[in-house]
Length: 99
Image (cartoon, rainbow, N blue to C red):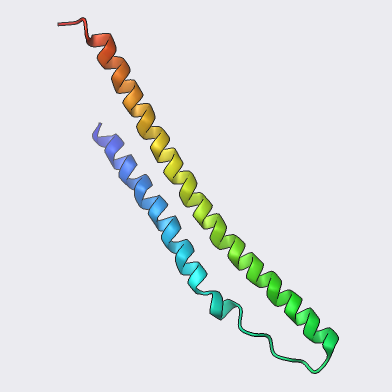
């Protein structure tokens, strides 16, 4: 049982880390997406803006993926906890007539 508590706390810590780092990554947005400088040519300016928008989308997508991983770890931990409770309940039910 002690081993299970260690795993639960590790999973809780991992989920928290994913969510915290996603937040930190999102805070980097101003450094990743400065306003694009004008190049003097409308076509060039448009191309630079499109590339900058793509970088911002990739940055945001990565932060979202980190959050998703945190949610999945939380769900796995909760599922493991529910499974453990079910197994303990099963053993208690089986042993109720003993002793």
